[in-house]
Length: 151
Image 1 (cartoon, rainbow, N blue to C red):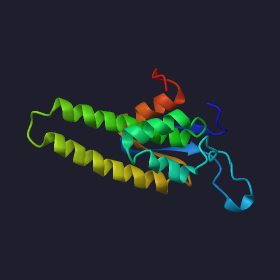
Image 2 (spheres, rainbow, N blue to C red):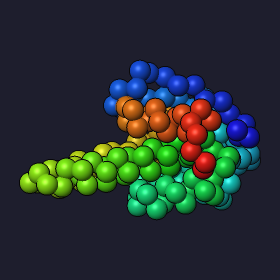
Image 3 (cartoon, one colour):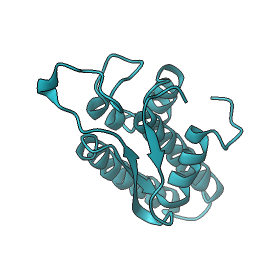
């Protein structure tokens, strides 16, 4: 990774376990707008870019993964949004024959997406990554280079 900050995973991967991207806090008065952990390839602050990943999960997540190369925090949220939307879609397709199950899956994923949007916005100042269990672990592996997907 070419970003200037390091990432430390915290927690055991349970839903809601936080992992922290270690960086200096953002200081607007310092005159240094590209502080460690806050510099991005896309000229938008991570406090806006990270929640944007969940807005249209697959589309916006893929766009941000393709164009954002510097910020680990934003890439983690983009991959988590992609994996969450793929997981919900595949689960609802496999269980389409059960009454109301696909609707319940999509409703649950909508609630989780809203929670992730809020946490991505709220935690952007401290760069704390809100992980969704095995989905967050898969996003970590993808961003940190231990997975084999090409993006």
